[in-house]
Image (cartoon, rainbow, N blue to C red):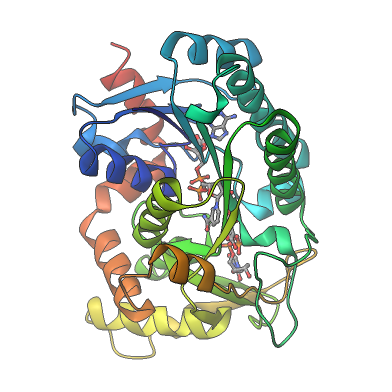
Length: 348
Ligand code: NAD
Ligand code: DAU
């Protein structure tokens, strides 16, 4: 089977690519990525020479190129993760999100529609999405697959739009699709603009750790490798045309999470307890900041037998260890050196 994974050089995509390349040597895995600031081929150093792995540099907004690679490679299935993913960036540059997340997704759907015509039943388009499409919760309740869409940020609006297009292509043209909506991921290879890796980096360097507003917002955290196994489960066992929510049943107020991270790092760095908490700095809140996310994952757990492999404390400890053991990765990301890896390794 030939599988196109988009966004495979990013945080979650790289874990999905690695899982599929190593677990399914009989599959041919094609990783298509534009290598934006968030794409880092150093994430995949360990598997880049595997015979069942191919990297294609390309932009999903480039309609002609998408048609060309579909025609040329005749993919059997797509797992679509490529996206602009950072909420704060979507507030300053919403159109970048419209282009990649909406138009880019539609370009892939159109290329699939054209290339798979007459043979839709043998192909699959799996769209990886976010719980942010559901908007925000109050103090109680959880997002289920039936929760009404109510996106608030340009990022979540663009992801909601792409989800709708994917389902519309199923209803209108009969392309077989699956969608999953996942909560906040954390773990190795997370770009240090997002809360947890940014805080790890700053704590390590004794820099202020910015907490938006009062830190009262709640997120539901899932270890990234568990998201990858959930994607594997949905891809292979999920029902066509259906949606699966994915989450770790693991809600944390931002401020409590940051305090736990500070204490974990004090211990690992041999610092006196309380040292890192002094770095916490409350800053202006994010515009339109959703109060609380919490995912009801009972459908994927009960129907597909998936469950997270680690508790949050275990996952967070593994994550901190990974960042402390991989200073080169963080150094290359913060210096920008990672952006030359493609030219150095692939395009000599
Ligand atoms: P990321 O920003 O780390 O990676 C995105 C990848 O997509 C990068 O490699 C980037 O180079 C690539 N990309 C961006 N624009 C592209 C374009 N126009 N053409 C081709 N490639 C392009 O993102 P992530 O956190 O790994 O998220 C991956 C997917 O999972 C996204 O669709 C996101 O919406 C979704 N998601 C993320 C989370 C999370 O917590 N990070 C949770 C739920 C769902
Ligand atoms: O819920 C899934 C989503 O989780 C994904 O779809 C997004 O791609 C992903 O980026 C993530 O979005 P969030 O906005 O929740 O993640 P972020 O790490 O940016 O922020 C997490 C929380 O921490 C949020 O409430 C905002 C807050 N925050 C964030 C940053 C970067 C801070 O308090 N300080 C910060 O410096």
